[in-house]
Amino acid sequence: MTFDYCCSKDQLSTASWKGQVHLITTVNPYEMTVTARKSCFHIICGTYTHGNFLCIPNLGISTELAGLNDTFWNLERLTMNNPDLSETDAISIIYGLKALNSYISI
Image (cartoon, rainbow, N blue to C red; front, side):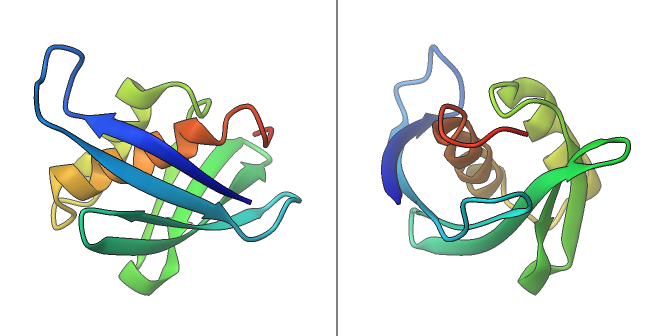
């Protein structure tokens, strides 16, 4: 399944861009690709004993997640623990997860 979505730095921002998330697996843990602004990420996310997680194996990134709709907390976690990841890429990833909220449950 492939979904298009829109990203922006905040609700008041005029700068926005489009992204696309492709769900590879439909069972937990979920695998997907997120593509936006000339970047593409292979992502694994799901649940574990203490909550939810996000991994981007080819970048060596992993972090805890709140619910998929919680863009503020998820963005804070992703950027705080991975300073080499650009803010734009982090926003693209978090909004890609949010776009799947109605289709996957974590």
